[in-house]
Image 1 (cartoon, rainbow, N blue to C red):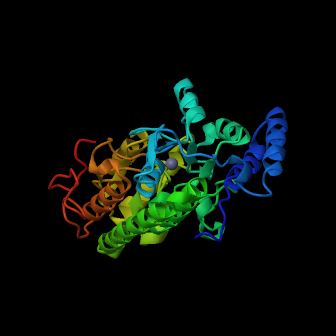
Image 2 (image 1 turned 90 degrees about the horizontal axis):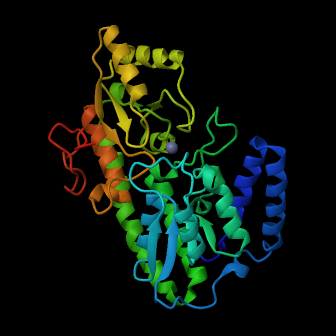
Image 3 (image 1 turned 60 degrees about the horizontal axis):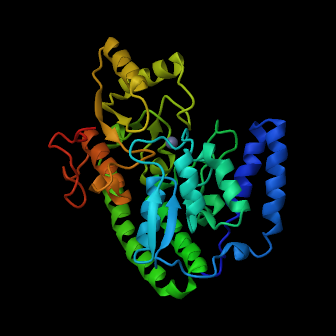
Length: 359
Ligand SMILES: [Zn+2]
């Protein structure tokens, strides 16, 4: 864990390189300037940005972008950090623009954690500015070796950012967050390492549960059809093919041909359920249901899945573990697999029908 070093500048530089391809010339010049600044302090990564003293309150003030990242840092930093998340329930991180309040929060934080891999596409300039000003800013996905990431066709060379969908991959981020916190707050090293070990054991249990219930779906029906393309890592880890009538980002819309192809696929494979997600519109899903009905095949909505945001704060589904438990349980039950109605820990707010409660 200690040997890899905390590469806080690398994710941003990589993201910036990718952004340069699609941005206008003026922005490229600004990005190049910032990149040069980041490179300047890149000889000893992070050294210039580590606060010298512990915060007066006794807790490090952390700001995280998504709920998943916030939960991760809360778990690893338990007892040492106070974490605030910018994006709440049902928020789409692909489209999220920071508010004036967000910028103030970020500027007053001791540390900032974000997902990276361009998930927070419209927050890049704010994050880069903070980084350049000397704040510790970390992308949790920098903890994942690049050869484990997926760069699907049609994503213009970008990595798929939805890594939390594979519990094993998210577990790699646990180690990385512990490493980053340890770098900023070395005297609490043992706390971070113990927290990380405890949380990784919980994630291992979750990973086994998801694998078991998804594996219990009869093979011909083991296909996940969702409203947007957030499940590539889930698909690879748990061996369930995915079909989605929409691309990597909610910024792209499916065409009529995409919808028709999907309808034909459902009818041919006699697949009974498709899924909606909490952070994207349901219009595309409705189009598919109506298309299948016209061909005489009844497809149901299997339930709402959490893709890019967790459930309400304070609920089980408002945690990373609850989010994945919910998704796996709902998918397995709707497609004919075996899973307890209330999930791995009996804590899900799911009815006997296997559909998501209230969403
Ligand atoms: Zn997404």
